[in-house]
Length: 264
Figure 1 (cartoon, rainbow, N blue to C red):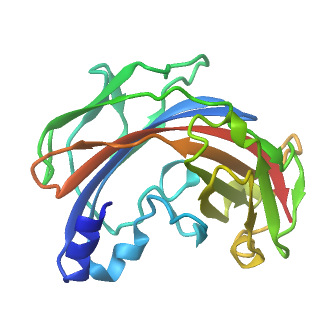
Figure 2: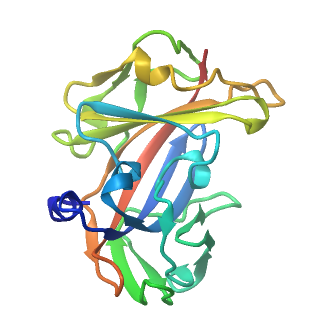
């Protein structure tokens, strides 16, 4: 969000913020995704802005009463701002409700996002967010993968768990890694989400047991696969955009590597 908007919230004022990203996902689940949210925050609910967490820290959220699209809390603000209809590259309509938009870009398989290519999101404008267009070039992805956990590995909800990776496979080896997890019960009735941020270089990060304890034990799909997932990735530097009705807008991209795990 930036120090300028944090200072504005600290002074008791509201902040209207737009956040958009495109995401390439590989591993046990493959897909290209697009998301956008437009939100109003006041000091009392500023902590609900789930756009990341400081390096070395984690956040855990019970999503049983709803989070955001795709099961992750891209935005938890109770005040969503209308931006009208959104399209990607002038041709793909991005489905949305109120101020939250998102969906998969390749439902029939194959890649949509390619390194080095620019992608443009346009909005017709709504209330109170005016029309705009913003372009982000997709960064060259690395080969970010876990060395721990392995595919299908049981992960205790009662003990610390150390996530490990090969730092040499990251494009920005002196940057940060985003570590995420979600666990669903049978029928997707209950679920909770965690996110941690850590330096890439050490090649590992320990998620505290108190963070993991928020997640419910993973259920199973009809074919017996666990309904628990962990993924790691690295965000690109965001591009700023402006629109009437927003204090600031950011557009970024990320690559994710995902594995199925069994939280118990």
